[in-house]
Image (cartoon, rainbow, N blue to C red):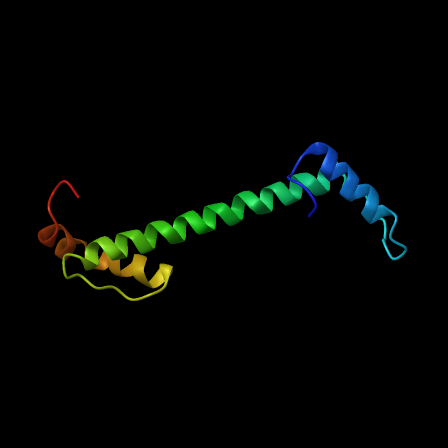
Amino acid sequence: MRTNKTDAADARAIWTAAQQPGMRPIPVKTEAQQALLGLHRIRSELVDSRTRQVNQIRGLLGEYGLHFVLGRKAAMAQFVTRLSEIEQTIPAPL
């Protein structure tokens, strides 16, 4: 990298890369392909968010001495089966 990131520097880098003999052209994506990639990104973020939430709940309950198995499905099943224990152990606002 020769300079800071600017449009001119980006254009110069693209031009330089295009001059390389082994540079292969990449086909432009269709709208359908871009839409499908967008759906995959959204789904991936939803999965990550769900995992973060389950881990956060497991961590918060662990602070009150309630320990649960690892894994989203197994933890969710234990949350449901141990709900009365959870309600008796943690403060009502939580």
